[in-house]
Image (cartoon, rainbow, N blue to C red):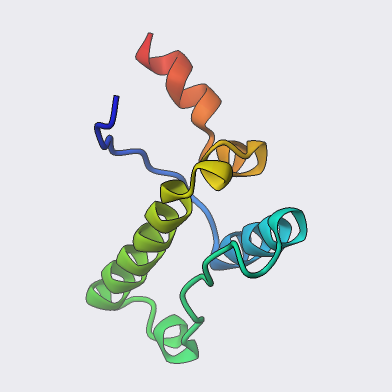
Length: 92
């Protein structure tokens, strides 16, 4: 329906990197946008709410970039990562 909805998933940064690797394996590195870089200083200071908020925003932008590509958006890997099947069942 073209409407953006909020959906939260709890994932570690390494899970996002793994998703990127899997998508690159399936679609090629030129098709899949690079995820945000891991900034070690962010993780050493992860108790800082502003830094965590910034990291969350970067990952959210990356996810929207993935979803903007129709091939990636319809990929079962991405659906499973976002747990969209469960989210759809909850909407009914």
